[in-house]
Image 1 (spheres, rainbow, N blue to C red):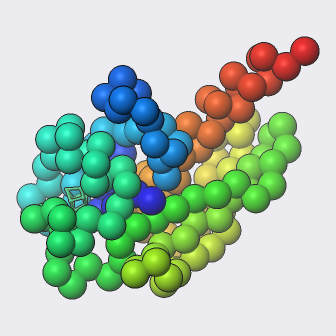
Image 2: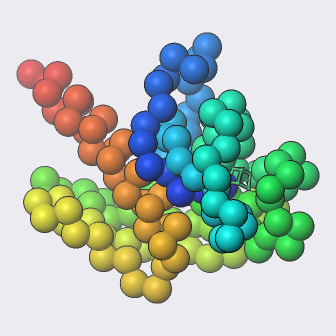
Length: 144
Ligand code: SF4
């Protein structure tokens, strides 16, 4: 589950892990911390790998707000066709959902139907989709 303050912008090399964990955004991403809107930074890569990509950084990251409303965000595909993906997002705190919803993504025109969610959640959803669709393309290319 990614940190709710993390805005992913580019993929990180898998080689940074000895054994790549199953990550909430699919692939590991680099990006920026928006925990302090007036002081957006790109955290050190080690912190991005261990905390920003994985969530639950409360008491482990000095930038995580003490009153942070949530600990992590996760995504999961629930339905798909060649042209459309449906997936859910869950924002959680203390391992319980505090917000959730369903999103739809039209693959051909890269349109994400994302009503009433934050810009950060949209960026995380797009990173998750990028990972998911690249893995799907690899699986389809390998199919007989
Ligand atoms: S883990 Fe820390 S540095 Fe990374 S996005 Fe969250 S608050 Fe920012």
